Image 1 (tube, rainbow, N blue to C red):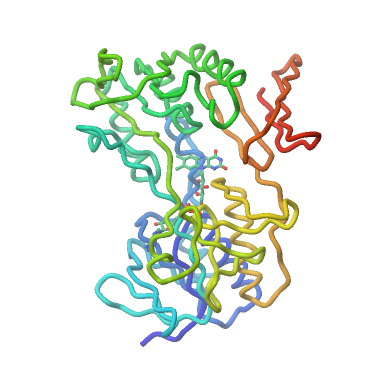
Image 2 (cartoon, rainbow, N blue to C red):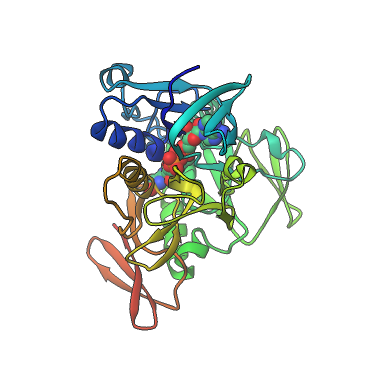
Length: 362
Ligand SMILES: Cc1cc2nc3c(=O)[nH]c(=O)nc-3n(C[C@H](O)[C@H](O)[C@H](O)COP(=O)(O)OP(=O)(O)OC[C@H]3O[C@@H](n4cnc5c(N)ncnc54)[C@H](O)[C@@H]3O)c2cc1C
């Protein structure tokens, strides 16, 4: 039986930062990170940007030597199947039990499956392994269809087009990123995509995927050697919900210190619905920077240090030559205004008199 310690489920930014932060405060307590992903921990944002575009990009977050130096055990390719809250253990495949004093859940989010005939053949883009497969497939493809007009769909489509693949982006909204940023921004993003060589077909749903084409509900088909599914992600709170932790809207409910409804159990990152002290309510977030910050707070709280989530969520995205940077609560708006300048434009989102988000595109 291994000694109990600080156990983290997940090697993404939330899990890794929690482990690193806790270790910095407690050099003697065992720290273990258990992750189903077999890869060394890596940065996800470049997967749909520089890496997919075929450019050199540094993905590794830490080397094996770093883990040894900081005495953090990293168990890769191992899935946690149950949490025993009473016994304070997590149980991995094969029934191996890992006792904990403090547990941080950082399971991230999983892609929403494309549930149409042949949908399994569409490639997802969530992990390093997915990105490797996609990059290889792009080399052998003349045409591609990307399904989903969100940020990752737009990024992936512009990269594939830059690689010389005739790329079509298909989405149910009339313009890309419409749900998040509105029609006016969506029209500009459609133009950016078109300038990058991407054909956009909006207001349509995919009804089937085959080896050579994608069928649309308009009755037409689009040729595709390669199909990418970018239909969004779902927070992965299954493990936590099965253990009996409080959840809401598919996420684990945590306070401003990332503490869940169970003693000594924390959750951070995409899977968490955390209380933000600036917003004064719980804010869902699926961004790298926020996952890192929430992991830091979970690590500090578990180490007995004061910490509270107060940062305003933020992220950036790259479509062709353009960078979009957003800072805000991301929870809808009543009005928006656009200001042009020589480098691009800025959109301010408001609820009443209050600014709830700012998007900069340059
Ligand atoms: C292609 C791509 C591009 C992105 N681009 C951006 C961007 O430009 N800007 C931005 O802000 N955000 C971006 N994101 C989102 C960002 O990467 C996520 O918000 C962030 O990774 C969430 O971190 P996390 O630690 O919560 O979870 P993740 O990074 O998803 O890590 C989850 C971890 O949990 C492990 N796990 C899950 N279940 C189990 C289990 N049962 N047992 C053991 N291990 C388990 C997984 O193996 C993984 O290690 C992008 C995401 C993707 C996929």
